[in-house]
Length: 103
Image (spheres, helix red, strand yellow):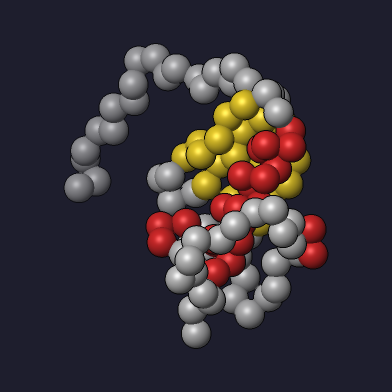
């Protein structure tokens, strides 16, 4: 165990951001939205943040991040028993049927 050598890749290809707005979800889900429109990106961000807050599927209780040009603009980090921020109440965003908070 202690004598094993860890080999690093010879070249690491950096992530190239080709659109200004991205929404990223942790837990190996990755980029769930990439586009030019801020309003569309924020709508996707809020939708995934709601799903995270409610414990829905693989998104449940994961960190959701809104990025612009590779820089974090907003983030939702699930905290048990804590309500999502008030700006996550966009009525235009639908949460899938049957998606309720875990008890």
